[in-house]
Length: 324
Ligand SMILES: N[C@@H](CCC(=O)N[C@@H](CS)C(=O)NCC(=O)O)C(=O)O
Image (cartoon, rainbow, N blue to C red):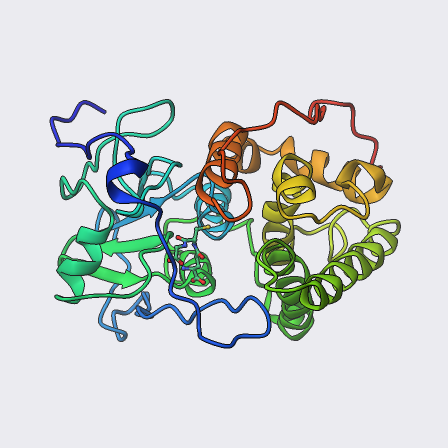
């Protein structure tokens, strides 16, 4: 896309410092904050946001697993022409997520913002909270609908059914209770579990998080011995949620977050499953390990103060898959 939109000045830690997330004082473990904008899109508009082609835009970072989910779901459903998407610079200084030209990212094609913070400010003047991705933006109201990832993926899957591939049902009615239950465990111990390892404030918190993480991975390894996906042969939202963490596992979480009892590649079923999903365009085209590596190693100075991005490990995502 050709656009003359402005961009942020280059990343500059000397001037702007690091982006910091205000932590709750006295927290005994890493706590994920509540994200403030929780509007919902509906097919009939009863929520105040009617599903319409061309009205909504997703701001994502390819580095961010929560944004990655939304991008995968949008792709799986074939909503590329219905909900637009643009990509932020994976490296973030004290100004937070920014729009810059670079490999796989660029200016804001919708509003010409230079910083994602401007979208939050436009929605809630004086906003002083987290500036996070993903952001679902409404062109009609000129405000953020939601920055809450579970709602964004659900709404893409339900409110946009008229335009979506009917063969893709990621949250099927009969499985909802089971999907919710599995998602909760995967969220607590895996998706957020890796952050609990990486940002643990003390040894005890790390020990608990790392044991819980690998206990769940061991369970999932056994589960995937008997089925192609987490719920049999049909791809569901649970697979999307698990996969975004697996995709980052050996490249960043194992080393950077000390999630290192085993590697993904040490689990035959999980590793085969991850490569199986990687063959699907929705997973492959939204997975940008260069953004992932540069973001994590470059923006957590308390974990990696020199911001050196390690070269390895070499992981062969193209290795043949035999999952029956
Ligand atoms: N907004 C998400 C969380 C997303 C999130 O934590 N995104 C990270 C990047 S991977 C981010 O932007 N963090 C900045 C912040 O939380 O202030 C949610 O709904 O829970």
